[in-house]
Image (cartoon, rainbow, N blue to C red):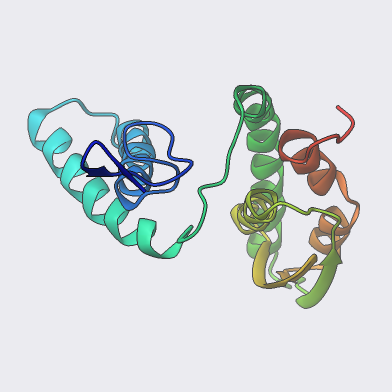
Length: 183
């Protein structure tokens, strides 16, 4: 649509419109740069410059592939719920890491790798991405494939498979990202 000689996308919000390429690049780059600041723990000018350059490069790449359509909307309530969950998730990752260390240092190396299918009721793409990433970030498990609500995960042993299939992780992700999920 044309307004006062300027082309404007219908339904556009914000300075770049909903889901425009520029907003996707800036959003992804900002998130990546924030992550860079936390991981590098440095405010040295060279580190900031390198982080900004890499964030912009990866932000440009990811904006083209991750959410080429509509940008997922995450509310302030969801961000707060996610921040409240991160310490609990960190504790679960720590305990899983201890379990994997136990397996690795045991001379018998008691692994029993298996692929398990974890069916979820998660409906939003952002929920499914969060769930797949949480599974992959947890030592002993790895998301291999996702199709609709079914996640194929590699588990190092029976205990890892039980932890994944007990549904606690899915329930927490649903509480954060799914509308109407019980808190």
